Image (tube, rainbow, N blue to C red; front, top):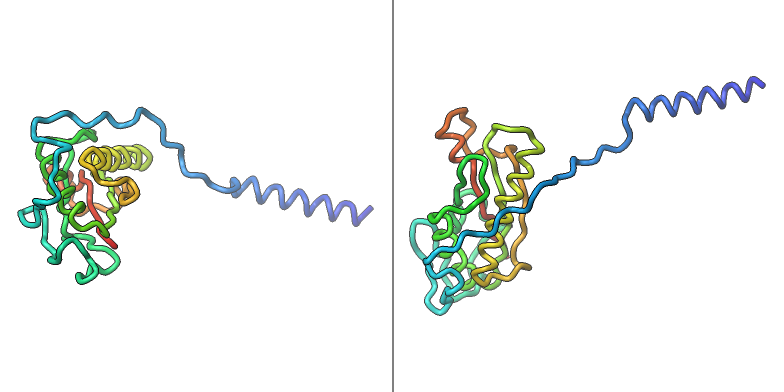
Length: 191
């Protein structure tokens, strides 16, 4: 009988421990409508010419070579200051501005020229809003960016989308100027 009480006590203690820990934690489900399709512009989207690539300009840093990255050191990733400039979003939006679309058209030409390059598209948000909300919005921004690059002929298997939410601000300030820098899609390029 004493052995039975000891076993029941141990089972009760373990059950209480599991209840206190709450069991395994799962990330919150992200729900909501998919990002809107990119707006149609008259800038010739979908008609990029990789034979006449853009390898210079304020949004692209040339890496040299003739479409092969093997002679160019990329490291594991470019990270901040890489060859592809960030694009920016309005507050609480994941739609691409005309300026962002133009930048992405240059990026697509560069990525089509360097066919061994792969890109991670990071969706970022400013500090306002909950963690869950900003993770969902960062994902929408990354997916809108990827969808536009897909429409320009870049293969899906060369792109990955990751939402950073508000966790990695480029400017830690608490002002409109800082927030506008943090609402972005950032590109990490690797081979």
